[in-house]
Image 1 (cartoon, one colour):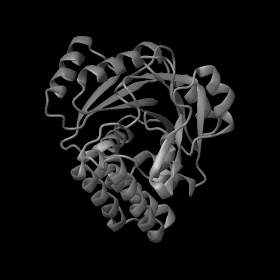
Image 2 (cartoon, rainbow, N blue to C red; image 1 turned 90 degrees about the vertical axis):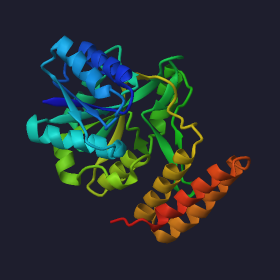
Image 3 (cartoon, rainbow, N blue to C red; image 1 turned 60 degrees about the horizontal axis):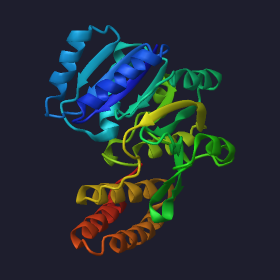
Image 4 (cartoon, rainbow, N blue to C red; image 1 turned 60 degrees about the vertical axis):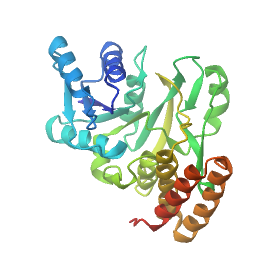
Length: 294
């Protein structure tokens, strides 16, 4: 069985649109699991009304009793599916996306050829049709930053250029993998809460010989932008905390401390007119260094 997971937080309309596009175009998806991450805005009621009206036998709604972030919400769905559905493959997909063709079958074919990998799609802007990312991005760990690969390119240009420059990680916007892989490497680290969860997961998987691939035949459309431009205290704190915690795990505590100073400097320069936001970023950067990692 092939299972798609869609995590919702206060966006029932977008989530339903995403699910309906998968039901229409992705015949090789056998079951869709929608996880409401304790939205407390009526999302769960909206989903239940939709399911009552449509009477889908292959869609399950789960209500997470707490908002446990991207990793915790998806892990909640993964655990339930592993216990109740006997899945062979999973596809984690953002709720603010949709497909207009069968974007899953190319991912499935890649996994059937080699199930020891994470695979991802081309993510296109719903507004322009141009790339938001060629599957994922490049990391600059010492700065705590990442760059989306192929951003704003046309599909034609991306096919010529980006296969020569594989991303360091696959975006969690579209991430497919075998169920057996989760049993081997475990689930996502929920201590991140926001940001870097799927990057950490893929880097941990490398220790088991798991690779990553972009499947250009798989394409989905994303509303808005993948670029995190909402300059809030929440964003700066959790984004910087995640970056330095990631660095501590994979590059060591000294590297993490250096990156915390550099990331704090970058945040301060960007937010020099907003000292409260800058301070949130600085606190997050050094909190990530202090957090425990295995």
